[in-house]
Length: 481
Image (cartoon, rainbow, N blue to C red; front, side):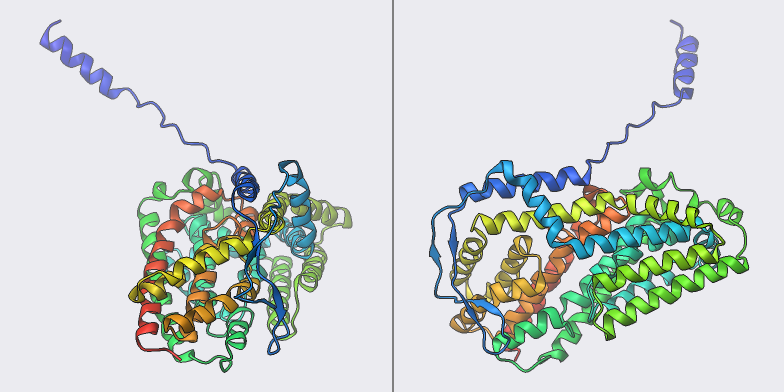
């Protein structure tokens, strides 16, 4: 072959389009969770069964563990054939939350069908198209302050709206979930005003309510700066190259990121304004009710039912149209439904297998042997591990603090530092562990695979842990009281 022919062949070959790159198919999140349920079942056959005696605490009226009463008991391994029963029990124990998710999905489907959501989000996206960072950081800071006294589980239903806004801004769905979970981690885990964790732990420790607030405020600010920076850096990266998003192949099927398509939704009409205003009214009512009136899942579910009927009427839908959209919206929540039920099944299996107390006892024994300079970070890490199997903040306080507080006294750590380590361990872990009800509900409601979320969140989690170790070490060094 002549040099000229060889050159022509190489040119022709280089002109041929490269074969399309195969996209790795995401593992279904429900498969991931079910695998962990099976592993939890197997652990009940391996880890020795043990338990603490429970006594009633005079200060709080709660049943707490007696830290000196741990003893091994007869093994109670869980039959793998009973795993479906534990999932059913998980659904039964979460029935209020699951009903809320169904009603939320149903209500937002009616709102979306009206076209008001698309028009209003399109208007907002065009307004902030060149100021994405302002919008993202403003929403993040808002969630930080809201979550000082609340938990993300009360705001799960708003995740799809935030996802739609971020997609319309040319960002990705991970940005939306990062705003919510990042804000929750900062507000909830620093424990400034949390009644379900900090107050319970301080009552068990015999400390004044909200004592040590000044140091928690410093932790809150530092974590807000760190997390805000990490989210901002991620949005800049995604804005420059959307293909770097772990959700790129799933998000690009949405037309919300195309400005021309956004404009095609049309302007806000009078009926769309009524739908939007009714949506805002019911959201504000739910926030006010949960913060000031003590509303829980059933009251919020009732609000979503009211929103569906009101929004449908404002959009001039017939009763049949409202019903059709309502049912379709509820059906879209089935993944979230089973994710939450399966996550609850994990704790149920570990409890039935009598290994929860064994895990807690084993970690406390390890802590006694840690060098003094590392004891505060070690207590933080121990609480992270305990949170995997006891993801409930108030439940973890009742199970862990009666052990950690005397342990802190023995090793010379202040009780306030021990509570701070508990706060950090309980709060930050919730956004990477599949046993977290709130995380599973959020991922389920926006149909985000767990492994895709972890591609972003594991790095943020490591930063949280590193800063937490520094802050609890400082608290121990200054004898935080």
